[in-house]
Image (tube, rainbow, N blue to C red):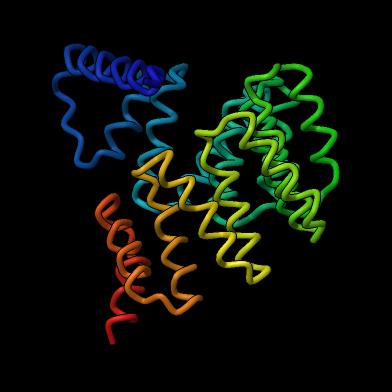
Length: 261
């Protein structure tokens, strides 16, 4: 269990209740007003600032989230956490150029495996060979626990430049490093699908969904494979399994409706 989010939540609750005791007359009209008021009261609280950004992010107000994160970077540009958040926001908006710069800045300010992996993987998707050296660097710095991610990233890079042999080799190395790590199975299957090797992709995805039987992405892509080989019954079954795991997976619902027409 990842306890960090729980700790942050508990700290936020403690701050909220302490603020209520100190300023009972404050009656916020909106959640945004509330967080802004708390930030005024506790301007050094990073938790409160992150909470406001998360509020904007959850409500898909990315303009506000970016405006506030940019303001934090201008004032506290030596804080790698704000650069990490800025990178996340830009990546979610498909602005990979700014995401790469932001995660790179976060990593250079405070070398750590999370920002290093994010930085390298986005570079890999952009066919930037610098991701290979960065993978070697973070592996050397942070040890065997991140080997599976570095092999995955190298696989993504070689896939992006259509070096299929090295891509498959690195995806397989990632799987061997941690057979419960689902991402290399998915990326390997997707590459096989691009090459019209649907039977091979099905074998990979079946293995993944056997290991992790609540893997919605695995079942969804199984459905796509079965569609390609005209096995409608198996495709619908896979899509239904996707929805059973994740009822909000609208693409699976759409696929079933299309097959039932």
